[in-house]
Image (cartoon, rainbow, N blue to C red; front, side, top):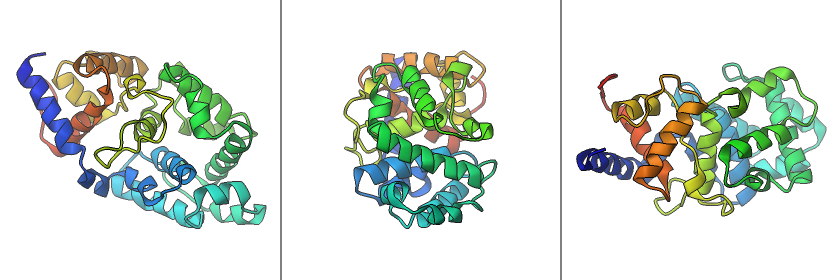
Length: 255
């Protein structure tokens, strides 16, 4: 990669990683909280719903927060069974009330029996693929409908696990610029993997950082490997550049 291209990516990363980014992004949901556990839970919920049009993602995430009485951790841990019934009519695309209930009961199990979300994700802190796989195992250990598993990316089966990787970016990367949180200290930013989607994949190929045509876990590994060449300590800062350019600028689909 020539110096001009690197400068373009660095400039774009700096340009998009601004507080104004939050206005149209699901990260605004956990940003409404200050307690660590509230941020973790609200973040996971918003990231889980993060597919489709961003205004609808935000709308449905806000609805979920309202149903939680704007107290995610307290509700998950202490709400009586009858209060959970309000979630049975929740629907967003293929995510329904049964999925909603499964997520909250699983979160309760994680905080009661596994030390919380940070502890679960940090068990394999130097290998994000193993970290996500372990999280998925713990998350699905309670009784649940098989259909609900589709809402949790599985890199072992080739999924890019975009939403979980995005969630990890939120929790791990530095909060210096007011976008990500930097809450979790046991996972290094250098270990994170790119939240790969159609936008970041297209721009990654445009800059010859990605050759693989499918947006799967192998593509995540390839693109992240090349981003680490640009910044070994914080490769996922380029998520802002790749996603931002892909969404907001008219880049050609081929070189």
